[in-house]
Image (tube, rainbow, N blue to C red; front, side):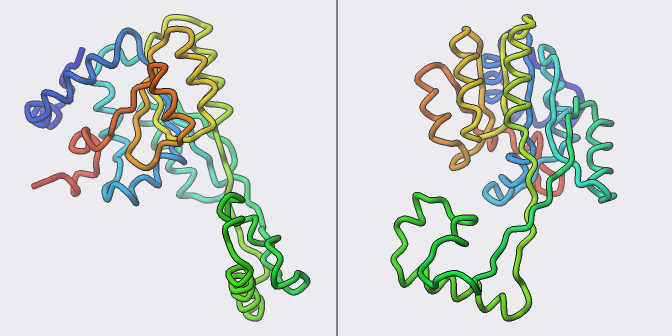
Amino acid sequence: MFKVTSEQIKRIATQKTEVIKQLESLLIGRTNVYIDYANVRPWANRLKWHIDLRRLKRFLDSFDNVNAVKFYYGTLEGDAESERRIQETEGLGYQVRTKPVKLMQISIDASSISPQSPALLESFIRGCLLKKYDIETIEYLNGKFLEMNKLGLLALSDQKCNFDVEIGSDMVLDKEKGGVESYVLWSGDSDFHDPVSDLLGAGKKVILFATAGRVASELNVLKSKGLFIFEINKIRDFICWKREMPR
């Protein structure tokens, strides 16, 4: 049941009655929410608006059957802003799970490879696409690497901190503990196919909160088994940055 937790939410809800009704029909029984923030945060580029974590938590808390909101995001150790973000998120009432971000060096040193070799490109381009490239394209891209090498750049830094295993394990563990009927996953990552399929097979309700173009095909196929995909643009006014709200 939706219960207003602020005057602002009340005002927006009066204009979004159909959306609230839909969510009430989806969030059946005790509900847990799992937010894969590393997957969710870049959605802003496609959405053209940003998620305000304070407003999101307040909105989710408006549903009295939401039991826990679990938030997964890495910490860049030694980075004050990254560490502060995690602390602030915990302060908002999220159940935060974090771990150190891994820093990796990816070589772009093209001096010792054939101009026609895709070896360096394999670190940046998926194999299914790389196979479509002709020799001229590969030579051109390797030439760009050589240009960067001449400027003294031989490697690129990349960050990695996936929570697919942790989130999937937590969802299945919550199922085994019992008491949770609906599982809300904020992500579109293909790695969640197996835990979501497991939950659906156990008769649980699973709702994927995502946006068009950000849901892997491996998850889309589970719609036939009961997975519901909720478009988060429908709740933009409840959860976006205040300065991005329609005037």
